[in-house]
Each structure stands twice: as C-alpha cells, then as structure tokens.
Image 1: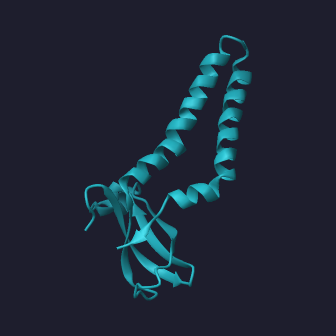
Image 2: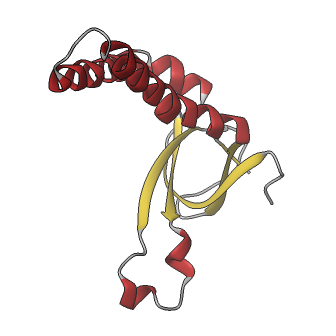
Image 3: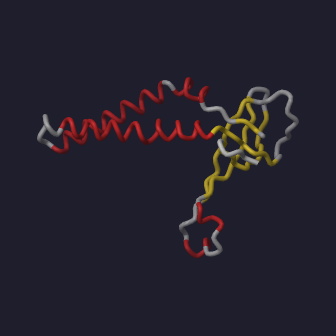
Length: 138
C-alpha cells in the first residue's frame, strides 16, 4: 500500500534483464471506472513502459503483477520541470518583449523559441535527470 508521501501504480513485468526490469503500467483517467465509459468516449487509458534498475535480490518473473513506487516529491519536481518553468519562461519573454517589439508574431515566435531552447537543454541533460527520478518495485 502506498504511503502518504509516495506515488504508486500497479503494473506487470514484461521483461527482466540483468540491468533493467521493464514494467508496463496502465495510466487511466478518472472516468475509466465509470459505468458509461463505453458510451461516452471520453475515457482514456494509456499503456506506459517504465524501466527500473533490476534488483539482484528480488524474486520476480515476467508477467508478475507489481506495484511501481516513487516519492511524491519526484512527481512535484517533474511538474515543475515540465510545466511551471516553461510557462514562466514563456510569460517572462512575452511580457518583457512587449515593451521592445511591436510585432506580436515576432514576440510570440521568440517566446516559443525560448521555451524550445529550454526543452533542448532538458533533452541534453536527460541522463542526469533520469538518475534523479528513481522508481522502485514494492
């Protein structure tokens, strides 16, 4: 059972190698449990693959149902990196450039380019970030 400061998802092991254990989780929206989801068309379920470092002392087999866990702070950190910081960059650029540049399309293009540069740096440091975001099997 997940503690208060943890995020947990049920999943199934699809592959085990000496380095990584691959777990498939089903991320479902809130309406996936609704009795009318077949008629509505709004429910969505996505299969996601997570690669975890293999624990040499764990006894798991392909097909086992497991719980994948991470700390709540890792989820909040991911939200900041993915959404909050790019939004702040976008807003700062748009507002600061409005005093300098009269052309709205140019301002918007520069602001979007600024966010693209941010995501490019995130992509460059993806290995360092992947070491910080740790998942484990309970």
